[in-house]
Image (cartoon, rainbow over all chains, first blue to last red; front, side):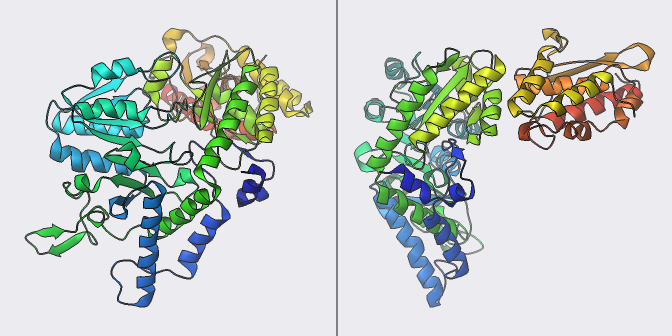
Length: 399
Length: 142
């Protein structure tokens, strides 16, 4: 792929020609096709879905369900296994509260890792406080990779669920999911993949992964905010009670009781984020047109160049595994990441400085915060050269 | 309101600098020259929330009814801003401190975007903490 042409797809760069945007791990910029899809949905085609007798609503329903088909194809799922949610955070809370409260009891173990984002820790802590489950964490080693030997000990007879990030948002570590899943399956545990950092940059095949749940957020995939996807194996979803109650998810309602629609609509109470879903469809089309394998290759090249560039600075320590995905975290002797991010921004270079919503991981790494560079389709080798020059300024200024 | 010479001298120096790198360096140097804060004073009570790096500010009574401040941050630039704020208010009375508008004084320095008072560098939160401490001192509660 040519990243120079991808850059042209994003109006933010024509409006801000100097911008070097390297905070894609937090959220990605939007291509014109997504912006147009949102504008068209509100300006021309707008109507409710799933309940209109008139043609406009039926057309909107068709567009909404076409998005479900496109998302299903994107991760190789069946369309009835795709639930639209607000984002990955809601997806994890949904599974914790619906599946977790139904099938887990006091003493049951949920296994996470030390790499998790807060969104894959806090929902399980809430559930622990509600019903007394036990949380266990697979540690990481000095290279920032999972300790698979320790995982073998931790995933055991008491394990009912392994919930794990596919790619670390801080270190870019790619988890060997088949290896973890074979341990989980050996003890009959269910599996949940937080795909926020993998869906935007690699080919995802949930059937091949054979996970029970997979989630990703639209806004990191060049789509709108406030929309995300929960995939669940249909047989598993069918056993789960609703998470939210309301309109659109019921079969019959009386004052005494209600019966619910089958998945996925069972889990989409109320008027959904119709326009967000259409925007997400445009985003999925956008990345598929470039090709996920091409995006993966492009970002791998930028990641290697970034590590090489940062390594030239004696005072910089680059964290995480050599061949990660999507992100490079680093720290600098005697200079706080906040200082680095501030100086880089004076050169219109946007990076993340902080704990990346992964405070427990910061504790494990023994740093209060890191500076993180994370990539997208529009980043270029020139962006990384600009980062290198700006880092020279950082060194000069804090000398 | 007469501003302390430490602050006005710094303002004169900053206004002479054209290059934003030099301005940052001046702010960072100011932080490096800040009176050290004892680690024992860096507590939850002295920590200023609302800053993306860690910031602490502590006040104790000084002679002639003034307040003596110590402060620190783990980030250089923010520490420079702590020093800048303290240069405005050091050893002054609570009445004098509350009569000042630290954000307006910071804005008068013509600094780069990140050092402006509207940015999320924590300056507003620090200035608010200093005012709260001055109000406490007025009420004899410090």
